[in-house]
Image (cartoon, rainbow, N blue to C red; front, side):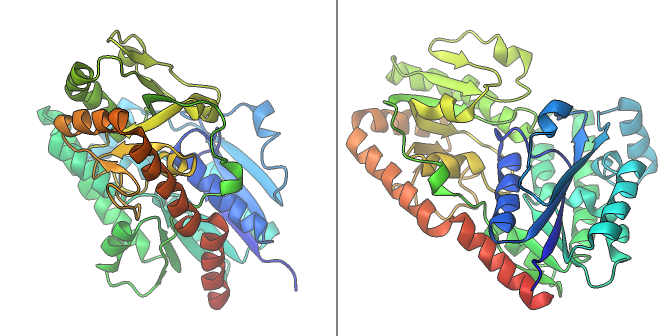
Length: 401
């Protein structure tokens, strides 16, 4: 029997492996490949997350094929205004629709003849008509987030009146587009149970399977470097919830933390770091901007702090930290989608006072805190094993083919 063929379509290059989205896509790609499927990866090499040609030529050499199309997806104020005034579609959909990419997709579909096409963003759904012309192809959507939840949360918090009007309009457009798009796929792969519940309310007839981010523990050994009991945060700063949460932590939380723990240090890093954060000058706060290696950055640091105030989906950096034996302190939004218990696998903190108290407890009770970290690594091994997750997806797909 010939191996199954899957075409995975992404709206960015899954590289570098420093943020949750790229890590989640890479994990899925490797899962199918390791299961013996022929994997064709077709990606947009966007202007906002551009990867150089010489780097691209060295990526994914072990796949059946990896190709990309250069796409300009820069934010344009004139286009934003036109979209707001004259279109019913979310601006993100229009920004990611490119004729050149559609032509390439047509060519790949005709020559590769995949059994399955998996889109890694709902904003790529405008390309579904191309896939629909090839009968028998299973169409899959990976839901990294319920997108409208993110914008709904941001719209509720923004104070600027014009921004609130725009964010509210964008939220409504994304909600309508997202919900209508879900029905057009044969299989939906939400990354969390909570997101799955949102989809189930639509009472759709297509298949649905929760597929969390998978970890290969053999690639994340326990730290051998001596760890310092300091805090760290790493995440892409072009994702608004990351930036919002970090700024809140520095402004509202840190003064309380440093008052009761005067020697505690906090390091943060990430792509697209805002200039005001690069230049920050606060006692025991260190901004490292974008680091060459996330693994090296976290190696000697013990406590991951994720002060997330909004957002949907799953925080891949939390899962990776748990796998690496770190102590995780996060909010109810940060832990959302991860099947973990407060006090057993992680420590919950929602208010500034919570962070202050929890950090102090870790520093005063290192053995107990380490036990929580150990439990978290066991949780990853049991419930977030990438091979097991991929096999469940493949079993579902095989029943549909």
